[in-house]
Length: 86
Image (cartoon, rainbow, N blue to C red; front, side, top):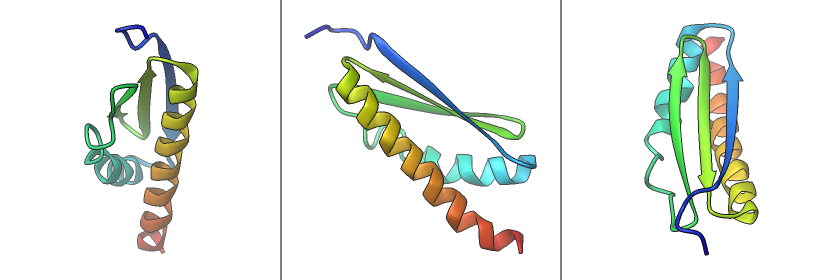
C-alpha cells in the first residue's frame, strides 16, 4: 500500500447566494477529520457562494467511498437548510 494519498477528487457545489454556501459549509465542516481513516481524508473550503470538498485517498475504492460519503453529507445539509429559505 502506498504511503501517499495518490488519488484526489474535487467536488464543487455552487449556491444561489453566499449565505446558503456558508450554512452548508458550516454544517459539513464539523465532519472534517471525524470520518477520515487510514485510506482517505477530506478538506472542506468555501469561496463566496461555492463550497468545495477535496477528497484524497490511497486507492480508487476509498476515493469512491469518500466521494459518496461527502456527497451525501452535502445533500443532507442542503435538505436541512432548504426550509430556512422559505
